[in-house]
Length: 164
Image (cartoon, rainbow, N blue to C red):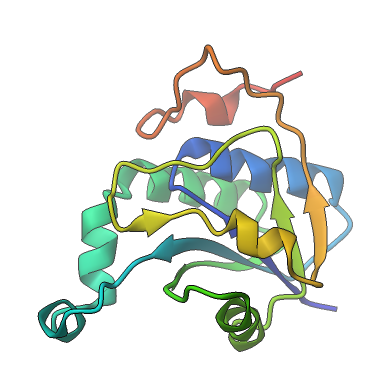
């Protein structure tokens, strides 16, 4: 049966490593729909709401390296992955997050407890606190990322090295 999996992201390669580790552990599952989700504050002013568009958000996030890494993973695990997409959550309470999960038909959430999500974009916010309070099935994957290693937003090298 096809399953939709949500992975919280800050658009770093570390988020893609969470997916890679999950796929390695669950090689028997096929037809997975992957949703990378991030929080995005749209603001409350009329002008910010009028000029709000998905393409502007994607442009602001600077996803070139992230998209390259996604294509690599999608090609390597083409027998398991049916599709990958990016979604933005813009609510501020648990109820709106439950609606977000229902609207995207999320069956399972995969995240890592080893890293703290962070972004260079001021409108971005971490959705992990919402995830931890939801009743949706979850898997925490340890990546053993140390604090001494700087977060790699534009380097694909962590994707090709197997940790621990």
